[in-house]
Amino acid sequence: MGELFETKITLIKVINKGAASFVKQAVCYNPRDGLVLPINAFLFERRFNLGAAWRTVESDAYSLCVWWDYLHLRRINYLSADVEDLKDFIRSGGTRYGNIVQFPGSDPILNFDETTAAAADTVLAFYRFLKHNLNFRLAGEDGSLGDVRRKFLGRLRSSGQMGDDIEHHSVAYPRSERPKLRYNRPTPSPEEALEVINATLRGHRAFHVQTYYFIAKLFRFSGLRAGGCSSMTVEGFFGAMAVETPFIKAGLKSALVNRQKLAEVQFEIVECLNWLRQQGRTYIFVPVVEKGRAQRLAPVPIELASELVDYILNDRERFIESKKQRGAYQPPDNVFLSNKAGGGGYLTAEAMSNKMALIFRECGIAGSGHRLRATFCESVVRELYLRDRGANGRAWQPDVIIAVARKLLGHMSADAISSYLNNIASNEHAWSGEPILVRDKGDAAIMRGLSDALEGNDGKDVGKELRDWATRMAIPPRDERNLFNTVKTHENG
Image (cartoon, rainbow, N blue to C red; front, side, top):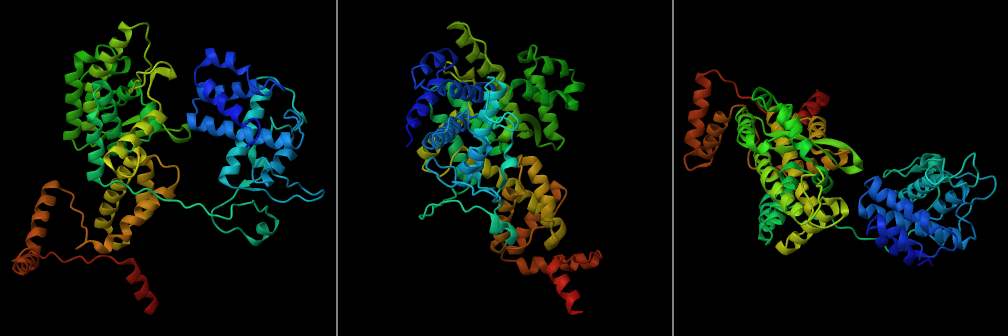
């Protein structure tokens, strides 16, 4: 490890203690060249002002540590580093001991892998912070590291094959001779997901138990990530109801928007939610901030929303009052609050993920809270597939399914949706029968009963009677439209 590595790890722990102590303790660490305090300020800005996850800040600190050692071993002052130094760092695979340099007159195309690109982004963000926030003078004022963006240096390496022209001019990164083995944790079944949710109720602190019970249910039935649960606010939750017609007609919009005397109208709020469900609605859509700090509307089942109303207006309020009795306390607007001092007063995404991982281990089930989201995602994609498959037969439309699922699940890429869809479609051969679409719920119940009868002991007689009845009613059978057979017939014709 480089000489400053342990110093940076110590700094990570220091700034986690809060603004008051981090400056006081930081001056004790390696003030030789004035690097430590700027790094402290940069990490503090990332964590507390920009809201970066703690693991992200830790990764940033490690990347800066490697970059510093790389410069130190080459006897380059960090303020004198320029774009070419960063390019050489990238050519060396982002390692502290890299010694690859560019020959004069050559300009190979830099292709980042994701790890090296992330390190380069951190280095560039650090120099932008030095220039624009701390007014440091950097080498090459006309084109310093505080001015450039990563796309100026190269481009992210695609997962597919590159063209021959690019391949000959690309930089080969050093790689370990021993490949890493990666394992994909399985998606919990609905039964396993229910076991995990019930396991959250085993704690001894009532508010703590209820909090993680709802977090687990939001993972499972809303497909929220930990960041989405952490960022969900009371304002956003009740604001999602304020735009719905039944709440407006009931005169609740003003109370929901201003959050005035909501406990007094809790019964009316729940009644409006029940009315939405009776009208066939499944979700209300609550704004949250998730991956990449992007906002999306998360689908919260109406039944779960009714439970959350009671949690927010009663359990959460009692928790706030108990905290105020012990001293001055100003709660944040986040739905899920933390009992720990500092940290903003709300449960962070990391705290939620760590707790859910512990519950999974206690249940003896492989996975984490994020895998509960996968259970929800797979169930949504399966339902969309069956609906489209029932309506269109084998000529089902994967692009339509992926587009709808992406919006509902908050996926930036279609690849994740495609993996769920591929698993479902590849298992189709294990199903007995074919899916069909029935639009009326009453008809669906009758069709299920008819399906059971067709598979029973008298199935042949039931099938004959059904076909005779369809003939008398002049109902022609509709075979599945098999797109592949259609193409084959056309080619042979």
